[in-house]
Image (cartoon, rainbow, N blue to C red; front, side, top):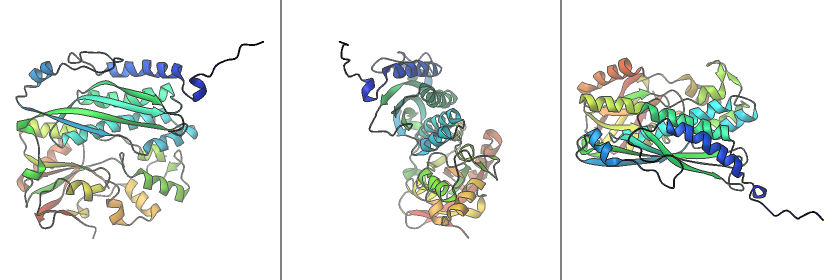
Amino acid sequence: MPEKKGMTYADAGVNIGAAMTALDLIKRQCSKTHDGFVASGIGLFGSALDLSLLLQHSNMSHPYLIQSIDGPGTVPLLAKQVMEQRGDYLKCYKDIGYSVAMHCFCDIATCGARPITLLDNIGSTDMEALIYEAIISGMAEACLELECRLVGGESAQLPGVIMPGAYDFCACVTGLVDFSQHINPLKKIYQGDFIVGIGSNGLLLNGWSLARKIMDKTNIKATDYIDFSGKSFANTFITREPSYPKIVNHFLNTGLNVHGYSHITGGGLYDNIERILPENCRAMIDTRTWPMPQAFDWLVKNGEVELKEAYHTWNMGIGYVAILEPDLAEKAVDIIRECFGLDAWVIGEIVEGQRGVEIDFH
């Protein structure tokens, strides 16, 4: 009589072998970002960084710890569609992984902080090792650009929680800034300051639920080509977030006095500028000062989206904002264009009034 086989973890939908394969691939990507400050490898229950040595190297006398955590929202659902439609889904996941890490770096850069470590967390049902590697390799590329160390993370198979073929992940970044360079816009922004907008190259990580709704309305698939770009929808709209922290670091290193920065994420120019404004300061934005990128124009027209809703959902071509004295604004614009290859414009000013943001669409 054959021996009865007992129930296994695999029967419950968890593949330990796949997890170990993915972990091996992830370790290779993480190790690329390690340097002499990392005091432990990948795989222990906690990562270790020689903070004393790092502080000596960075010459900080009064360091502030700045942290941020974020994820890709619903963007991976588009990568899932690319996979189902036999497109280059690994590139999509790698670009999304890069942008998740860079998104967190952009957040802490608004405070003047530089990243020192990144932790990731990935959850899925299928745990396809190559997808895990693509996500982490994208994060590692962003880390290498800003001398950050990807020191560890967590991966989990969650059958019954996450739909088959879907991937949910996030990054947690820790950074440091010396007291002398810490940026607190609530104490520095004044009436009369000018607003410099720095160009974005797409939706980045926000507003994708509305974008996918427009895809459904127009019967556009992720791999369908879009006329204005000559690329697929996915390759047109899934773009890597620009390295805005390099601009912040340059201005700090050269002494250009910026009163405040805003990362234009979910909520668009309205919500993200308002959150850094002191009381009695109102931001006046003129949309004639920069061209609306074709990607947003396409979404607005095909989705029949009202402009106020669009500017409250997407970045509309402005991914980062710097607020500074009027006589420094044009200088900042020139530096951004010449040194970093990004478009920039003076898009508005801070006036006396009720705290908030007013956008003139003309």
